[in-house]
Image (cartoon, rainbow, N blue to C red; front, side):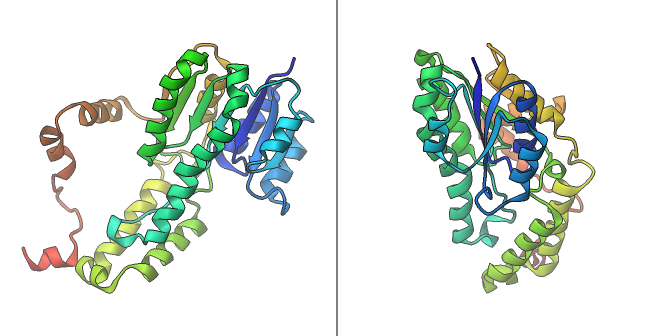
Length: 283
């Protein structure tokens, strides 16, 4: 009897690595890729490097996967698709907000709803793997865990820390496109209030955070957490990968203590922090 998994967005990064890893463990893998129909390099490489058990499918080919399952039901679904959007709230256009929500949040909901009857029948686990900047998907997964308990289906969240260099989500070319988009779409009054000096410093810091030495090149720890979520009979509800104990304590503090106590931790000005142009004039 084959065990099967549908992997969502495997063109590169965590999805690509997890699809290969699960194929090596003997799973029947349906690797969902964005560019299967147009001959994407990621899907070509997966087919070349993996066994005949792995198939690449255009996201989200529900009927194709249902028709090719070796047995009834789907053992696991991994939602891993995501696009990144940098910039302060006032800098980002509404079109960009809609695009990110459509892919990162509603995309996960659509794929889950499409495949969930197959998951329930197999009583498989669900592993939502993405460094969630979108609280909506995290809350969606937590709610799903409670709803699925009576069905014997597990819902697992894998939350990586900074692994930007291990994926192409913030590659130099992609990052530069984001910066150009921000610069071209920010309203004039916002540009004047923030000033280009502040904008440039913030963009530089973003680049350091997501592409610098602190961002891991090796996705192995994240992929292994995903494998545990899929293969263990009693996986953890949540895997925090790549965070230090200090980070964990800090975010536990921020999450459970009153906002009036924790606000000072987040909002305190630090020496050397860049200041928007308008604030420089009023101080």
